[in-house]
Length: 352
Image (cartoon, helix red, strand yellow):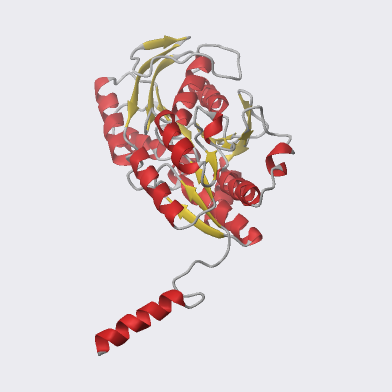
């Protein structure tokens, strides 16, 4: 009798309005490419847009940081009734078929932070122009080593377009190439590659694992004690590089990407030359605003934008954070002083 009563109660809870159902609001999702802290800012932007638009937000961070995991998350989201998805794709080239066959016919899809090579696989891209941001990192290397030197690059994966574009932008800048768009791509496995006055010892990947990045940096410092600069292209790389250098007799310069607090503190202490920062808050905010309009059938949200190109890419400007910025420019990039930028980021994360 008790068991029958319990089953009846459970059935009632699932069918009564508001019980076991969605909120009735438009449901939109954001799927990052890994679980690192960089995405907290994007989630804050999504949250703000969700409040303004009165939508239901689902934010997912793949713990494994793989394309297979992302695809499982997306399939689950489709079952739960999402109407739009913003995705930072891993293994972008190989995921196109999945997106075009399983996702875009069902929901509005855009790419954020990472793009796919086929514009027809998504409605638009929102994020950094990663090649130009990579050139900014190259300018920071030049600032650290004006006479040239040996460098090593660290990044999570080289199947991600943002990693490839940042790396190539950095190398092209150091090679003295004057261009805003990537044309050719240097061998991703190249070692001891001459680029202008500089030599790229190696590019090391770590499967999006900070501890692995630190281990590989320590190995570089042991095998190449004459390395002059370590460059980290993803958010967690610079802190890992900093720890490796602190534990080594070699003291190369460090150039970073993104606004990890340890990176910013390293700039304040003079241990990191600077970092190229994006605007992940705006990635999240703009993505939700665009998706919400597209779900309603409002195509003007893309057609009427002045900052969108022929492939429906919307670029959010990057900046360079350094110590004692003043009116200095790094390459073609706007700079901001770390003592101004750091408090802004703490406030955004809700920290003092």
